[in-house]
Figure (cartoon, rainbow, N blue to C red):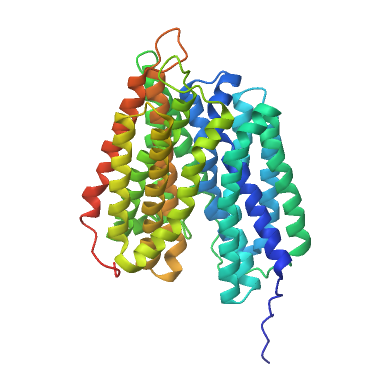
Length: 465
């Protein structure tokens, strides 16, 4: 007797719209910290190093949650996991909206980081409920609205924080997430789980990788105070080494590893990871330093910009980042990944050098930041495309996870390095970092990014890498 496979229940425009509104709300919630970071540092008395940590903790959580969310979504149903994930995000938004101090705000951001897993789960729902052509359109709509939400959050965070309070800056998009989640729960049918993959989730690997990233952040944050706390820093370095060794051992033995380290032996994979790390280090330095320089008082070497003005100044960069994906896709298809990555790396190096040399006018930073965002988008998109086409179809998720984790580590290292440079460059008794600290930061980022050109030379030319 044969069994007829279950026919998936289709979804209409309203359900796709609900997924899109959820992407819009999560994109807005994700983006509110960057333009208001100087304001948060002032109100909560944060050091530059603590501000750098706040700027990347959400990304770290996202890098850890995303591969697990995708695996659980395939196994138990995308909608089911998505709703539970959004409950965690909503709690994080509420915690972030009422921060009496930095540790509570950090805790809220850690919980909010689960939102990064929303996109792949939405894609799972769309693919299971729609024909191939319609699912591509739905995925494009959801992705585009997530980017649009990021732009809206960047632009609105400052006015909300200054006109109402920093609490409302988190509360309003959190309310939007809650409403959108309720709509998804009502309009989207449950998708059928897939139990064909019997291997369990790599929880030991997840815990150890979390420990590696957290310890790495502590080491980078304490590096400027090495003279006063050498024993503590030495102990953290020893712990970091032990955690890395333990994580590598666990991943090599796991039946279904979170990150398959054996793939790093493949040239296409390790080159993509190296390039992603170097480019993201350079980019994150600018992402952190540019808003700080906007906020430096006019009497010094800055512009005294408010959070509202900073969001407005950063908007062209957000637009450039949204354009980078389609441009990179067209470029990779016509010219190959090597040409796109090389072009992006050159633009990034030139922009960083230009900003280091000349930043006396607001438009210098606005144009420089937009070029940096465009270059980063070109490079990272080309690397993801290269990975997707250089491994077997059933290895795409694992290879993409490697690049994702590398991207987050690169952003974390660059942000913490920037915070350390500003902390070291702040004269005693002053709250304003010296101009030389910014120049050194941009220059170091340009030098690090230039190293990527050594790797791009070894990539094969053409569209068939």
